[in-house]
Length: 103
Image (cartoon, rainbow, N blue to C red; front, side, top):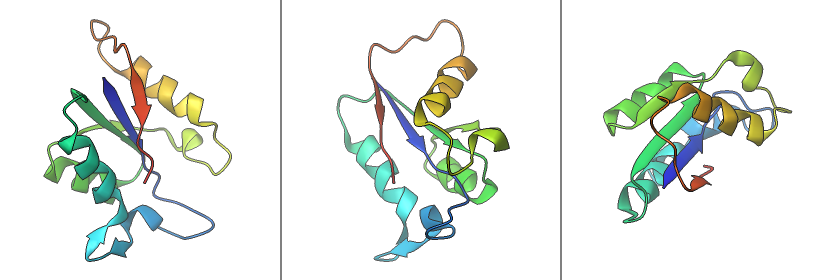
């Protein structure tokens, strides 16, 4: 099972929301920790265009797939983000299940 954590750096409603602290942790960390605790998830990927989010992911040894800026807009359909992740992965890896863990 592949867990995709989509985490843009920008947000109109709450700027930099994925990096905002909630109980002393960035919001993105809650999704990372949930994925790491799951016994069913065998691969975790964060899709982001943001360097700070990528650094947090790497701290937790989470794979980062750099999202193009045109896929990091407010109106970008989530299916386009997931397809970008799948198309960016090596061809021999095909997950049977893909789940989204949105911060």
